Length: 415
Image (cartoon, rainbow, N blue to C red):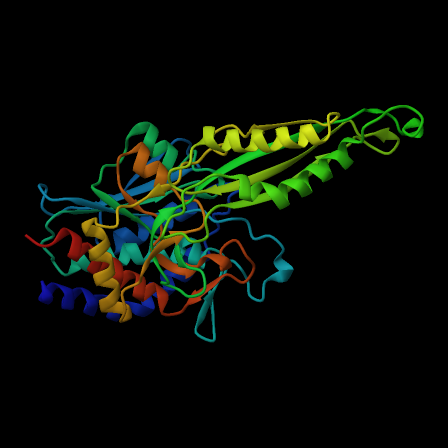
């Protein structure tokens, strides 16, 4: 085993600059979602797999412009299958004037690699590919199989990505690792075992639509003003009314964001008869949609009692936004030990267990395909994702590739 580890590490060290350049190439390959088109990314991935003698990648797609790329490095057919997975798409650039560098050009400044998707999550994809290449080139007789699954559409709900893989039951594995950014304050801060769920809903307030010139003469209710009152009360008081069981790996608890979208009224001269705002609630394992519904309804009932004229209701968004299940990877699973051991060999420390505050594809893979999934263990920091001037450490692609290669060795063993 030590001989194979040394060969893998030597291969990746020799390929450091090539891996860095490939990460920059992926950053320069647009895959913004929306609008959503991962064909160029899929092509770049397959071309690099072929160049590294990793032949036989497959494309599975619900729509031609939304490809998912699958590749399996076969070892002992009787052993476990480990899946490394990540998404090919990124969020849109947003306001280009806020970027100090070209977001679609991987650029190194002061030991940082800047670019859209650098941490979320093109460096992880590049690292997974080179980890597989290291195991293949080193002729490592894996005691199982390594499956790479690169998906479409994660940034807009995963309809064409993880959901499609679930619908068609396209992948099988004993366990998986998602290469989402695993840090908030520092890279490689945690080995994240919890993926918080997401629950999106809208609150609607009815008023009196009428000619605005007589709103002070006839009885009337300003829906926009009432909505503002409900929004402020909800922001102040609802978080403490949401029931959940605290988790030792996620001291953050739940997170409620009210008013992520707001709209109301018709036009000048029209007294507003309808106004609404949208909310998202990040949930913990053990919470259910019915439980959240009861908590919100109880809160709104209290507001109705305070103001009998208040006409307010709420509805969950259609699935999947209305309820994405939280998930948890078992802390005593052999893959946890494997990844922590690999990280310690590369980083010099064992990342503690924790949670990723955001929502990932882990619940879809875990509940839809029966694949226990570590939701986040990849380069980057979550606060930089979806933000101008996204960057990772210039050392991160190599570190990630080494961790993924050694982690596969630790988990699958050799035959």
